[in-house]
Image 1: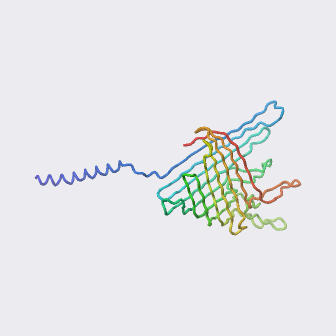
Image 2 (image 1 turned 30 degrees about the vertical axis):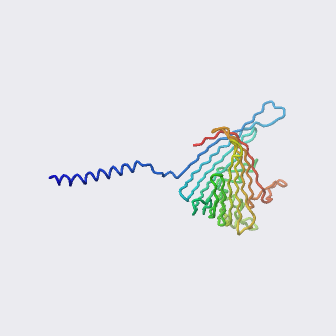
Image 3 (image 1 turned 135 degrees about the vertical axis):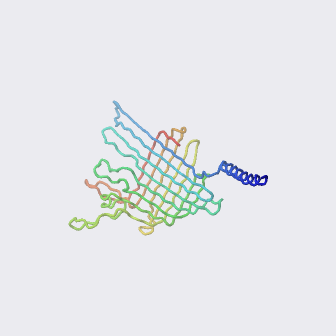
Length: 315
């Protein structure tokens, strides 16, 4: 009987001991947090009003809603960075309809892998997408939009190498193999050949022979750079540059997208910023009014300057 009780005791005690080990191991915290996130929303506001102002002027109010969201995964020699940016601004001036001042939606996903843990060089693959939310017009004409949602939209997909210095907020990316796709999903704009797509073809009598293409695909090289630095207490300088050249069509003709921003941080909720955005794209043809008619004069440098004071909220 004594041996029988011992025989029962050992399996039961072994089971309880193993359960205790499992329970203790489950309570040990494991480092599974490889993701970092950043969410920043803001509203810039400006207003000017006149009453009996001898020098004259029009009262106006402007607002810009913006959001920047990022998700970054870092584990060992792997880094995966995802960013989403939204901008939408309007202006209302006395005696004039509501007009759009800013409109942008962009996505960026960048995956990198490095062989050496101490190296700053990565093998990298990158995807980006850019479009807008609402119709754009060549004011005062508000009948025929010159741009719309997904007209245009730009997609970049490529592989290359990336130099990343986290401690310096510096990043350089070079891809000799990048596919650029331009979408113009509005048929009227596609028929006009807007943003570089093939326009509609008509015969001598004006009969439609072929509708305009809604997409255009290019294959070329892409270089991008990013740098952000605090050059004075609570004053930050940010530089973003993108250069692209197509191998097949006019190689050496470079599309430029360059943004410069200076942020002045008052506190965690209030911030002022000054920004300049320059674009040059050979596929975007400018128009001028000559003798009462809109005439295409070719590509021109596009320049936008912005000054904003507003509130921000990070979560």
